[in-house]
Length: 467
Image 1 (cartoon, rainbow, N blue to C red):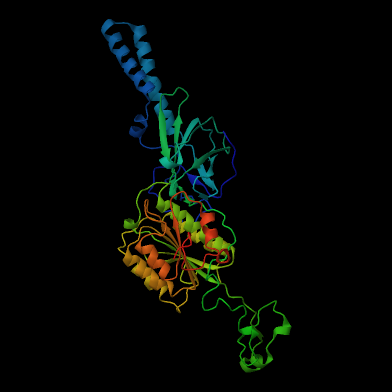
Image 2: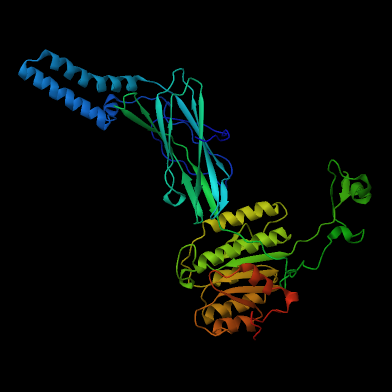
């Protein structure tokens, strides 16, 4: 038995309840409301159904002894038969009338882990009744991909007592996995009867793609976009062009704009200087026809992990980054992180989305063109992770390239094709893309370094340097 920290919520044992949808995000336990009255009771017929193999054997042996005693006229054998028959029935009645109230809680540490990493699940059991419990057997429901179902045996829990256990889970496959509900069995000292109860709460473990640290390079166009070269806001303009705002507690009185104060009749201050963050878009091609193979070592999983690594890297460098798939819906929104979201929050949203992304049935990349063409004509840096392309896909992406300040395309390399690639890669290069062919298992940091503008790889050239 391993100790674990206390959890924030409790769930009381009772009749099985309908499962509750997991809450958004992760990190905090989400216990369900108590199911039923939480006491160890139910119908007597259900209690009789809890007889174990040993208990049924006792009943069968006792019945046979009673019949034989009646036929043979043996009083001593009759007493033995009555004892064997009565013992399991008495245990059934005792357990049926036992009213233990047991509350349980679960905490994940952490609730979001990269693929291949371990998370620890802490379970806490509280006896909230006035009577001690008997022998308790716990089993938590765990998906097969996270490992075997953990089982624990707890000895007598005193009134008001607490027991804490923990176990580890691990998955090489990204996704969201439900843990629970917790199941518990109460047994009599002779092992003749077992009554099972199930809690209603469960928690969600999110397994996000693995990310790799990338070198601090500067791909061409990273500072592109309408505001890429601007570093100061309207506060740097002339006094006639300044846009003031209302005074807030703690503002420096030296920034009070007296002319606007006299005009609006309230204290107004000049806006602070605001640096404009460069905008970046990470495009992930999820079309089913563009990918072959499945599993952790497939090209699609490599692309998902690469998109996660690039998005986190760009956010750490201060870029306003968003994720875009062929469905045309950006994550976390049209303006990336936005002024109201921190880079850590934006990275969390992107990783949560990539944890559950699946291959889509989209026929093409038209929605990508519409999503990137709805702005002001400049979308900053565009980094695309693409599968198998045809000439039509390449031509469409070539038109998207002219709406971005810079474009880097990771294109899946087809076995046996020449180093300069086929027609789609040639069309991308002619449109101004920096094309980086890859295969599953290639080192992403090395490919990312090849996109460095100062490393001699200008837009429109492949990793091998050919036009």
